[in-house]
Length: 143
Image 1 (cartoon, one colour):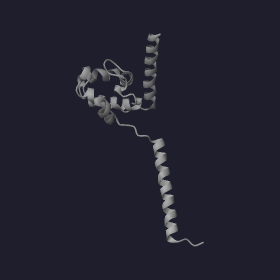
Image 2 (cartoon, rainbow, N blue to C red):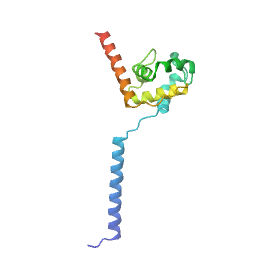
Image 3 (cartoon, rainbow, N blue to C red):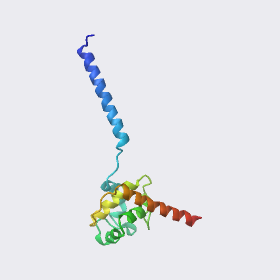
Image 4 (spheres, rainbow, N blue to C red):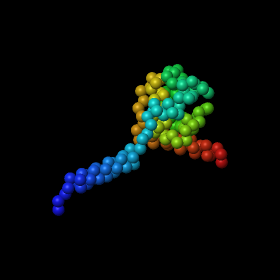
């Protein structure tokens, strides 16, 4: 069977198109976009932490953040995610994941001199464990 150039070209582009679509679909499923700490700070945290509204520790304020940094990365992240003092849970964004929130906390703390890294799976588990305890304590108070 003899192939013409146009049939060959059409077949080539059809296969190429299918491959590109498959790769796009695979990348969407496995690599969903997660905001960086700086992006989350800009989108969620900056309104309060830039100005210090409601006594929130200001970005880069070593005195205010120093006390929190001493508490440790897990407690400050879990407590902030849960909601603490005037800060609403998840910084007021109900769609914020623990990992995104944790990255924003790392960004904020590092601006004040911490040398924290984005949490790994073990630290995320510790944060989630602390969150579960806080939720259980709150449920027991309601009972």
